[in-house]
Amino acid sequence: MNKTPVFSLAVPSSHGEFLAVYSGKGLCALRIPRRANGKAAVRHGGPCTNEIDAVPAQVKAWHRLTVKALDKALAGQPLGDLPPLDISSGTAFQQRVWQALRGIGRGRTASYGQVARAAGSPKAVRAVGGACGANPIPVFIPCHRVVATTGLGGFSAGLEWKRRLLNAEKLKAAN
DNA sequence: CCCTAGCGGTGCT
DNA sequence: AGCACCGCTAGGG
Image (cartoon, rainbow, N blue to C red):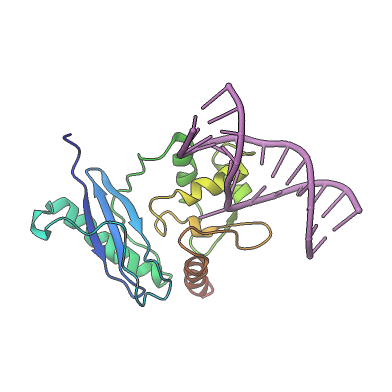
């Protein structure tokens, strides 16, 4: 059972503690804290099992980018440099969707149908919802920018978060 | 406004 | 293989 090492590191933020998970290829997951208000929170599934000094330099460098970018994101500002995003855990369809999500600019939104088209499966509208829900790197892969034609649509980490993220970047985009 | 049917991918038996 | 989910949507009362 010799598997690739994975490192989980906490990401402090103004709205609670996120958890970043790194594979050998880059950031492979970003967990949003339970509570939108960031008050209590921080019971993410697994503890940060890695001793800080056991973390390779490259992961540390990636983590610095993550911390900074998350801070920007919560402020609705451009993210700047990101670590490489390792989305290899997804199915082919999911990866296509996640890739398409990255094309939605900050402060903009797209419908599930638009994303389905962009991902090359125009009728897989509902499935896009599923792929968004399975997005392992929310915020950086902006699934929060996908909204239903009738309203907000859903968000696995809680609609408060979706609103907050959209709101933050909308205010900035309105400059 | 509230149905309803149709849709495609995913994860379970 | 089958089946029941769904972060959906367009169309029709």
